[in-house]
Image (cartoon, rainbow, N blue to C red; front, side):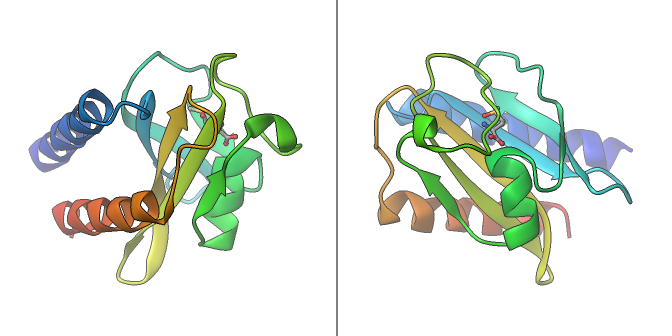
Length: 138
Ligand code: SME
């Protein structure tokens, strides 16, 4: 239990570091598979609290990534029909899955209030962040 608290604390520090240092990262959070259920549960985050602490697989951008195992870059959230709005200020989103031993166990989710800000460099960077986080939990 103390190990899992420490992992959550370090994840919170990762979220805060990213949000505070990258101007177009306005909300940063980690979702993980909720036990045996086909749903995601919000873990650590930085930014405004969200009502969407549980997201069923397949629902929204996050739920789709839980199923596809692939990065999802959304330049314009208004153009998505399977999208869960957390805040009306959000214009774009990126979700990158987090793998432990090849298994998709969760994801990092970033919302931006800037239109179309995410590039391939964000994808590579967030994949790297997730690889570091995967090592915390193995
Ligand atoms: N927009 C996400 C929901 C999570 S909030 O962005 C924090 C989605 O469509 O899955």
